[in-house]
Structure formats: C-alpha cells, structure tokens
Image 1: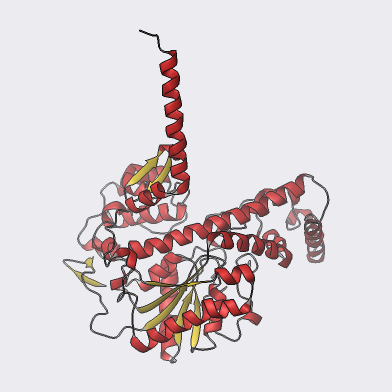
Image 2: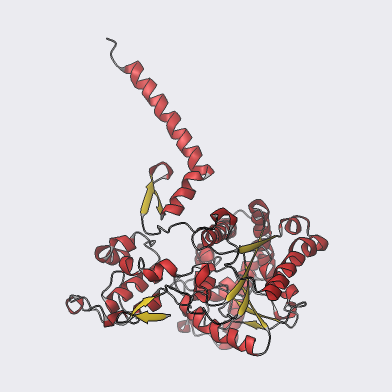
Length: 476
C-alpha cells in the first residue's frame, strides 16, 4: 500500500508492478462441490501445500460438523490453518490474511506451490488484495481530527473491546448509510464500523467509498499472481448432496459434537459457534439436556461420575433418531436436522452469488470445473475427466505462461467491470419488504424467478381488484 498526501492511502497503481509476483493457486466454490478433494488430488501432480480458507474449519473442534478432511485422508499433504484457532475467539478476514501471508512466503521459500482452498470468499478476497479496507484507516488520523463528541459519549477509542455496547441503532444514528449495509444482527460488523468511526472520526460510508473501496479486491490490483479455479455443480445436485452429507454427519457423530459445545448462555455471533449446525440444535438440546447438566459443580459430581452422566445423556440422545416415537424429542431433532440442511443449501446459493459478484464487480477471471456428473453418479472416472484433468491443464498453463487472473477478463464483463454501487439500499415491497443492498444485488433480485412470479401474482390481484371496484361502483 502506498501512502501520499499526509497519510491518506491510495491504490492508483499495483504496488507489485515492476516485480514478478508470487504465484498462488486458489480453489474456490460452494460447500459440497469437492474443493478439498480436488486440492489433495492435485498435490499428487504438483508440489502443493494447502492453506485452509474456510472460516469455520480454521477453528479447533466440530471436525464432523465443519467437514474437516481427517488426517488419514490428507495423503500426507501439508495443511495449514486447519483446526488451529481457539473456538472462542473471532478470527476475522484480517486475522486470516495476517496468518496466511507468512505461511505463503514460507511455502514459496521451500520451492512449493501455495494452494488456498475454501469457500469463505471474503477470506480469499482479503488475502489476495494488497490491503484491507480496515487498513486504510490506520494513517487517516494524521489528516482527520477525532470527533469532538467522543468524550461526551464516554467511549474510549479502543477497537475490538468487548465491553463497548455497540448496536445497530447506535450506528444508524451516526451513519445511516453504512447501517443500511449491515444486518441488525451482524454484531461483528457493527462493532467494526463503529470502532473505525471512533478511532478516525471518518464515517464508514465515506471512508469505504473512497479510493480504497474503488480498488480493494480488484483483479488488476492483486497481491499475488493468482490462478483462480472454482469447483461448481448444478444447484439441484448440490442440494441433494448437501442433504446426504448432513445425514452422513449424523451417522459420524454430529450429535456428540453439538452436545459437547452446547451452552445455553453461549454467544452465537463469535467463534466456532457461528457454524451452521450449532444454533439449529439449540432447542433440541435445551429440551434434552436438563438444567443443571452434568458439568454443574453444585451437583457434586466426581470426574468419573461426570463422565458417566454425560455418556448416559449422549447415549439417550443417540437413540432418538432410531426411536419409533413421535414425541417432542424426535420432532425437535428432526426440525434441527432439516434446518441444518436448509441453511446449508442457502449457504450454497450465497457462495455462488458471491462468486458472480467477484467476477462482475471486481473483474476476477475464474476458471470453472464442473463436478455435477460425479456428484450425481459417484463414478470415479467422471471425477477424473470432468474435474481433475481440466484443473491440471489450467494450472500447468498458469505455471508455464504465467497467465494471471487479470489477463483474460470474464466474457460477461466484455472487458469492463461494473461500476460499483454497493451502498444504496433498495426495498422490494412485492417480496415482503425484502432489503437489497447495491445496484447489482437489486438487479439480480429483479431478474429472479421468485420475484417475477410474485410480481405476476400482484399484477393479477390488482387487475381483479380493479374489476371488482368497477362492478361495485354506482352506475351512471
């Protein structure tokens, strides 16, 4: 990042221009598409070390629920940032970037190829960008004075403090434009925006629409020479695969994992408890686990009795899926499993939308390989022919010719990225006052099948109402 004009960051040119950028391969794609398997298969053909870019797999614990590749399936391929972070901390995109960059440098120094693998696209975007939006505020205090009302509000300028009572209404009063960009329950982002404001005196909506926002994440401004490969599949096949995978997780011990992490007073907005599959089981566990559960010291359990008590509760819990009863525990468990499947299917759609935005808004050149046939048939030959071999060809061309993600633009862009309007809030009354953020999201929503169906029904309803009013109106 270059700094001019009294400490204001600018990115008018690629900071890596004039030197050869390190080469990095990125395997992206929606959950369940086969990213991890492809990366391990590629490691048999290239000197690869894998860096995990899944925001839940970075944490220790919940190995089944987060679908971590077990050591016996890693085929000896080094995996970094996989199950290394404490489950109770918030591992942000900045934390990921700061952890991954030295790992990449180390891998390259050994003559190996860094391969970033994961479906958390904002982790990947933060890593390949030469700086984060947060970084652009680090030197602003040299040219901007702190807001004079800070002392009156009694808030210290200390980012990330858990005792600061930040909420969405607070942000809305200070900066309604940025508040419209954030869901009221996204406490992490609300805390981040307010901390930026109190540290710099600059409204987030103003800061993020400057030069930093224009260039952050743009393909022609990457930190690395990136080969971007997306493993994708048709949505119906992914939906079926996700449902089957959740059932397999249940067989593999998912219930034991969510029991062990269950805490009725837990914060579900931080750390590992944000993972899909934790909160969904809360109602079931609240019903199944008694109030002074085994860990309650007041119950006077010895360590041995604690273990026995927990094992009895787990055994009773494991028997519920196979129970013929339609009682409350069975109904709550079925609802929890269905919600895990539903929310995972929704995640698939969000991830695919994010990938399209990276192409259309940021100019990323993403090479797609299709795992639909393999997911449908489970025939190994189709995996090799449709996924592995195309990926090998892409990487070999990348290593030989050095073709970066910027040299061939996405054909949908016609060589141009869309002008970014990511701050304007749109409300679709026909879809129950659904909030859309940014012109691109609004345009995509208007083109969606659900929206068009609702608009058609609304039009027919209005026409019928108009005819009824004509019939009821007095005849002249």
